[in-house]
Image 1: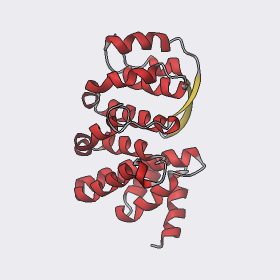
Image 2: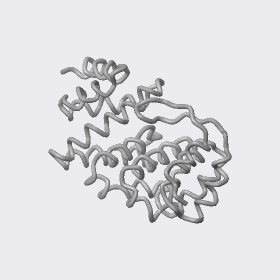
Image 3: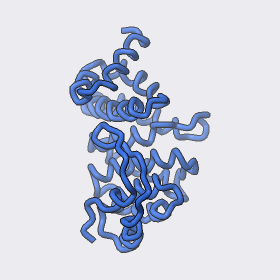
Image 4: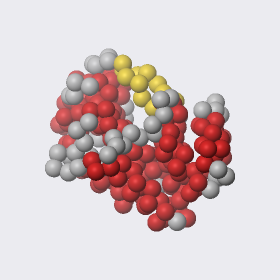
Length: 222
């Protein structure tokens, strides 16, 4: 199928009201052909289209990992390259897609979780771009909610983001930190539970307006 025709077809699927059914259809298309159109939507001006492309990339690459692991690794390496300074781009959507893929596939998670975490570690591959950091924090949060044990040893690195001047940073870092009963982050979560700044997040295939307080009040037993 020609790229342009396939891209139009996938775009129509991604914005359908019955997105779960559309997602199943996308995952049933030839994976190798689907990946490039999905990458192109990471730069879409339509936020919902971009985020649903992230979800679809997770499903497609997870299936690739089960059938042809090396093909899935090629996609992961492309996402990683997009976040490399030498790529010449910014890497919009790449950390989110990495988190989504790993949330859907345990083997990919075990293989690549440290790399995703390295983007918030000062002595690692720390990303300084404040907006791109939002994508990294979402990807880490998505993975943490699927595989909390893989993130637990690195939650100290969320501390600067829990008190960031950017409310999206505070909300997304709280979303992850609230999974763990850890005193240094618990103290900051107490403060963030009183933070009524509004942010927009992607959850359950939709864009939702929530408060930082809401994000900081999830799942914590401390």
